[in-house]
Image 1 (cartoon, rainbow, N blue to C red):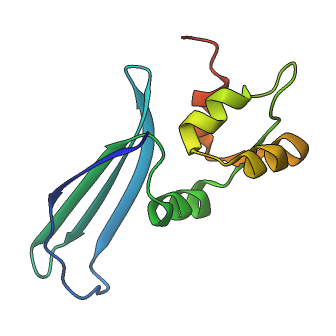
Image 2: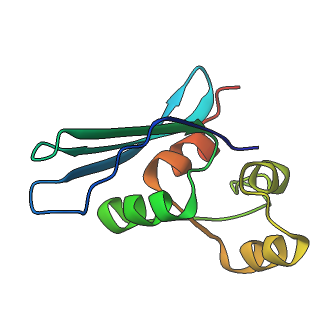
Length: 118
């Protein structure tokens, strides 16, 4: 299950100086993500982080920047269905579709899902 923690919210209207970064990583065997917003013009900062899969708007930006990795689901060499379902909270219909078509993950999610380490 995803966990999210917001440290500060101080928004300005986005301008050409605004910096927005999002990333994913694995720490202590857990999938994690962070987002950072900074506007040097108005001196505003916002930091957002959590465990699990990032919120959709952050994950979409990561996918747009880094692309997707197509993963087989189930069977020999595929991502275990139970792991995929637990991580993404997929419905049975979504699992059936992923089993038939594979699943598109971010590069970090793909490494996390296919890493043989416990």
